[in-house]
Image (tube, rainbow, N blue to C red; front, side):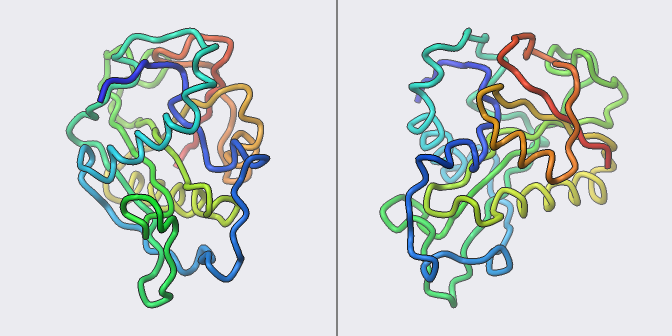
Length: 208
Protein backbone atom coordinates (compact mmCIF):
# COMPACT_ATOMS: atom_id res chain seq x y z
CA UNK A 1 0.00 0.00 0.00
CA UNK A 2 1.49 3.36 -1.03
CA UNK A 3 1.55 6.36 1.27
CA UNK A 4 2.47 10.01 0.92
CA UNK A 5 5.18 10.80 3.44
CA UNK A 6 4.83 13.80 5.72
CA UNK A 7 6.34 14.97 8.98
CA UNK A 8 4.01 12.82 11.07
CA UNK A 9 6.50 10.25 12.33
CA UNK A 10 4.76 10.05 15.71
CA UNK A 11 1.13 10.92 16.29
CA UNK A 12 0.50 9.64 19.77
CA UNK A 13 -2.61 8.24 21.30
CA UNK A 14 -3.36 11.48 23.13
CA UNK A 15 -3.09 13.63 20.00
CA UNK A 16 -6.80 13.55 19.24
CA UNK A 17 -8.28 13.30 22.72
CA UNK A 18 -11.14 15.56 21.78
CA UNK A 19 -12.33 12.98 19.24
CA UNK A 20 -11.71 9.98 21.47
CA UNK A 21 -14.33 7.24 21.27
CA UNK A 22 -16.09 6.82 24.60
CA UNK A 23 -15.98 3.21 25.78
CA UNK A 24 -17.27 1.74 29.01
CA UNK A 25 -14.48 1.67 31.62
CA UNK A 26 -15.20 -1.98 32.38
CA UNK A 27 -14.30 -2.99 28.81
CA UNK A 28 -10.87 -1.37 28.87
CA UNK A 29 -7.81 -2.68 30.67
CA UNK A 30 -5.72 -0.67 33.07
CA UNK A 31 -2.03 -0.32 32.17
CA UNK A 32 -1.28 -3.21 34.54
CA UNK A 33 -3.45 -5.62 32.51
CA UNK A 34 -1.44 -5.17 29.32
CA UNK A 35 1.20 -7.48 27.89
CA UNK A 36 4.00 -5.84 25.92
CA UNK A 37 5.19 -8.12 23.12
CA UNK A 38 7.52 -7.96 20.14
CA UNK A 39 6.19 -8.56 16.64
CA UNK A 40 7.78 -8.76 13.20
CA UNK A 41 8.88 -5.22 12.36
CA UNK A 42 7.41 -5.39 8.86
CA UNK A 43 4.78 -8.04 9.53
CA UNK A 44 0.99 -7.84 9.21
CA UNK A 45 0.33 -6.33 12.65
CA UNK A 46 2.82 -3.54 12.01
CA UNK A 47 1.36 -2.82 8.57
CA UNK A 48 -2.18 -2.84 9.96
CA UNK A 49 -1.25 -0.12 12.43
CA UNK A 50 0.31 1.98 9.67
CA UNK A 51 -2.98 1.76 7.78
CA UNK A 52 -4.96 2.76 10.88
CA UNK A 53 -2.61 5.66 11.60
CA UNK A 54 -3.07 7.14 8.15
CA UNK A 55 -6.79 6.49 8.15
CA UNK A 56 -7.02 8.67 11.25
CA UNK A 57 -4.59 11.49 10.49
CA UNK A 58 -4.19 11.42 6.71
CA UNK A 59 -6.57 14.33 6.22
CA UNK A 60 -4.40 16.49 8.48
CA UNK A 61 -1.35 15.69 6.39
CA UNK A 62 -2.92 17.30 3.35
CA UNK A 63 -1.85 20.68 4.71
CA UNK A 64 1.69 19.61 5.57
CA UNK A 65 4.82 20.05 3.52
CA UNK A 66 5.71 16.66 2.03
CA UNK A 67 8.96 14.85 2.78
CA UNK A 68 10.67 12.34 0.49
CA UNK A 69 9.87 8.64 0.99
CA UNK A 70 13.21 8.09 2.73
CA UNK A 71 11.94 10.17 5.65
CA UNK A 72 9.23 7.62 6.44
CA UNK A 73 9.94 4.29 4.72
CA UNK A 74 7.10 1.82 4.36
CA UNK A 75 9.56 -0.98 5.18
CA UNK A 76 11.66 -0.34 8.27
CA UNK A 77 15.34 -1.37 8.29
CA UNK A 78 16.71 -4.54 9.84
CA UNK A 79 17.57 -4.09 13.48
CA UNK A 80 14.33 -2.21 14.13
CA UNK A 81 12.04 -3.36 16.94
CA UNK A 82 8.23 -3.33 16.87
CA UNK A 83 6.30 -3.56 20.15
CA UNK A 84 2.59 -4.02 20.73
CA UNK A 85 0.50 -3.68 23.87
CA UNK A 86 -2.05 -6.49 24.10
CA UNK A 87 -4.99 -6.82 26.46
CA UNK A 88 -4.67 -9.78 28.81
CA UNK A 89 -6.65 -12.71 27.41
CA UNK A 90 -8.09 -13.93 30.71
CA UNK A 91 -9.81 -10.57 31.17
CA UNK A 92 -11.98 -11.49 28.17
CA UNK A 93 -11.65 -7.94 26.90
CA UNK A 94 -10.77 -6.76 23.43
CA UNK A 95 -9.14 -3.46 22.61
CA UNK A 96 -11.01 -2.92 19.34
CA UNK A 97 -13.28 -5.87 18.50
CA UNK A 98 -14.25 -4.55 15.06
CA UNK A 99 -10.66 -4.25 13.80
CA UNK A 100 -8.02 -6.82 12.82
CA UNK A 101 -5.93 -8.09 15.75
CA UNK A 102 -8.60 -6.98 18.25
CA UNK A 103 -6.51 -7.64 21.37
CA UNK A 104 -3.83 -5.14 20.32
CA UNK A 105 -4.30 -1.77 22.03
CA UNK A 106 -1.29 0.10 20.66
CA UNK A 107 2.14 -0.09 19.11
CA UNK A 108 5.44 1.66 18.45
CA UNK A 109 8.71 1.04 16.61
CA UNK A 110 12.36 1.65 17.44
CA UNK A 111 14.57 2.32 14.41
CA UNK A 112 18.39 2.38 14.49
CA UNK A 113 20.09 5.52 13.20
CA UNK A 114 23.08 4.73 11.02
CA UNK A 115 25.99 7.13 11.60
CA UNK A 116 26.43 9.36 8.56
CA UNK A 117 22.93 8.73 7.21
CA UNK A 118 20.57 11.63 6.49
CA UNK A 119 18.20 10.33 9.17
CA UNK A 120 20.95 10.93 11.75
CA UNK A 121 21.78 14.51 10.75
CA UNK A 122 22.14 16.68 13.84
CA UNK A 123 22.59 13.68 16.15
CA UNK A 124 25.56 11.94 17.70
CA UNK A 125 27.35 9.72 15.19
CA UNK A 126 28.61 6.92 17.43
CA UNK A 127 25.78 4.45 16.87
CA UNK A 128 24.35 5.04 20.34
CA UNK A 129 21.14 6.77 19.17
CA UNK A 130 17.86 5.45 17.77
CA UNK A 131 14.47 6.88 16.78
CA UNK A 132 11.04 6.04 18.16
CA UNK A 133 8.43 6.01 15.38
CA UNK A 134 4.87 4.96 14.54
CA UNK A 135 3.45 5.42 18.03
CA UNK A 136 -0.30 4.85 17.98
CA UNK A 137 -2.99 3.79 20.43
CA UNK A 138 -6.36 2.64 19.16
CA UNK A 139 -9.24 4.97 19.89
CA UNK A 140 -10.96 2.82 22.52
CA UNK A 141 -7.79 2.61 24.62
CA UNK A 142 -6.67 6.22 24.75
CA UNK A 143 -5.79 8.00 27.99
CA UNK A 144 -5.24 4.67 29.73
CA UNK A 145 -1.46 4.68 29.81
CA UNK A 146 -0.93 2.42 26.79
CA UNK A 147 1.57 4.72 25.06
CA UNK A 148 3.40 5.26 28.33
CA UNK A 149 3.80 1.52 28.91
CA UNK A 150 5.15 1.11 25.39
CA UNK A 151 7.61 3.97 25.82
CA UNK A 152 8.89 2.57 29.11
CA UNK A 153 9.32 -0.87 27.55
CA UNK A 154 11.24 0.36 24.51
CA UNK A 155 13.44 2.58 26.67
CA UNK A 156 14.37 -0.45 28.79
CA UNK A 157 15.16 -2.54 25.71
CA UNK A 158 17.22 0.27 24.20
CA UNK A 159 19.26 0.68 27.37
CA UNK A 160 19.73 -2.90 28.59
CA UNK A 161 19.74 -4.94 25.36
CA UNK A 162 21.02 -2.55 22.71
CA UNK A 163 23.37 -0.40 24.77
CA UNK A 164 21.86 2.81 23.40
CA UNK A 165 22.32 6.09 25.22
CA UNK A 166 19.76 8.42 23.66
CA UNK A 167 16.41 8.10 21.90
CA UNK A 168 14.83 10.75 19.69
CA UNK A 169 11.42 11.26 18.13
CA UNK A 170 9.41 13.78 16.15
CA UNK A 171 5.81 14.91 16.40
CA UNK A 172 3.80 17.80 14.97
CA UNK A 173 3.44 21.22 16.56
CA UNK A 174 -0.36 20.85 16.53
CA UNK A 175 -0.18 17.72 18.70
CA UNK A 176 -0.12 19.51 22.05
CA UNK A 177 -1.45 16.55 24.04
CA UNK A 178 1.20 14.28 22.55
CA UNK A 179 3.90 16.76 23.51
CA UNK A 180 2.61 16.91 27.08
CA UNK A 181 2.60 13.14 27.29
CA UNK A 182 6.20 12.88 26.12
CA UNK A 183 7.26 15.49 28.64
CA UNK A 184 5.42 13.66 31.39
CA UNK A 185 7.61 10.63 30.68
CA UNK A 186 10.82 12.61 30.86
CA UNK A 187 11.40 13.50 27.20
CA UNK A 188 13.02 16.90 26.53
CA UNK A 189 12.57 19.26 23.60
CA UNK A 190 15.53 19.45 21.22
CA UNK A 191 16.42 20.96 17.86
CA UNK A 192 15.16 19.25 14.73
CA UNK A 193 17.21 16.44 13.23
CA UNK A 194 17.35 14.22 10.17
CA UNK A 195 14.67 15.01 7.62
CA UNK A 196 12.60 17.04 10.06
CA UNK A 197 13.70 20.55 9.07
CA UNK A 198 10.20 22.01 9.06
CA UNK A 199 8.68 24.53 11.44
CA UNK A 200 5.83 22.05 11.83
CA UNK A 201 8.10 19.48 13.49
CA UNK A 202 8.64 19.29 17.23
CA UNK A 203 11.49 16.98 18.23
CA UNK A 204 12.27 15.32 21.55
CA UNK A 205 15.08 13.28 23.05
CA UNK A 206 15.59 11.16 26.13
CA UNK A 207 18.95 10.19 27.59
CA UNK A 208 18.90 6.66 28.97
